[in-house]
Image (cartoon, rainbow over all chains, first blue to last red; front, side, top):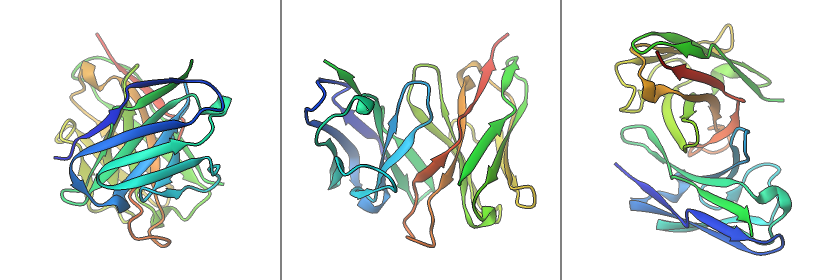
Length: 110
Length: 124
C-alpha cells in the first residue's frame, strides 16, 4: 500500500511570497496518477493539478506542479489572499484500484 | 455546467444504516466514473469507493469493505452509497466526486468535480 506524506504540516507565509509544498510517496509511483487539490475552509476540495504537472481548467498559472518517482512538489509562485487554504496530494494505484490522499499542508497567513 | 448534489445525510445510531444519493447533471453521466470521498471533522480526505460508468466493477477502501455498497442508476443520473453497520468513526462529511474524462486522457484518475457534501453523524 502506497502512503503519501506531505510536508510541512503548516506553512506560514505572507501574500506575495512563494510557497513550496512537498508530497512524498512511500514507493515510486506513476506520475500520471498524481494530483493536487485545494480546500478552503467549509468548502469542497478543488482540483488544481493532475498528472503531476498539468493545471486543471481555470487554474491560474501561479500554480505549478513537478516531480517524479517518490517526490512531488506544488509551487505557488506568488500567494494571493484566496490561496491560504489546505492542500492535498492524491495518488491512484491501479492495482487494486485505490485512491490515496496525503494528510494535507495548511498554508496560513504569517 | 457540471453539478453534483449529495443528499441523505443525518444522525444515525451505531449499527444503523443510511443511504446517500448523488444526483448529477451537466455531463453524459454514463460515461463517467463516480466516487465517494469522506472527511471526518477537522481531518483530511479519505477515499471511500468508486463505481465505473456501467456499474461494474466497483472498488472500496478497506475501512468500509463489506459494510458499504456503491451503486448507480444511469437513467436517474444518480449514484448511491448504502452504508450499513455504521460506526462512530464513519462520522464525516461525504462528498461525491466525478473522476476525470478518460476520453481526453486515459490516466484521468483524479477528481475533477465535487459536490458540496452531506454530513453523516453516527452517535447514540
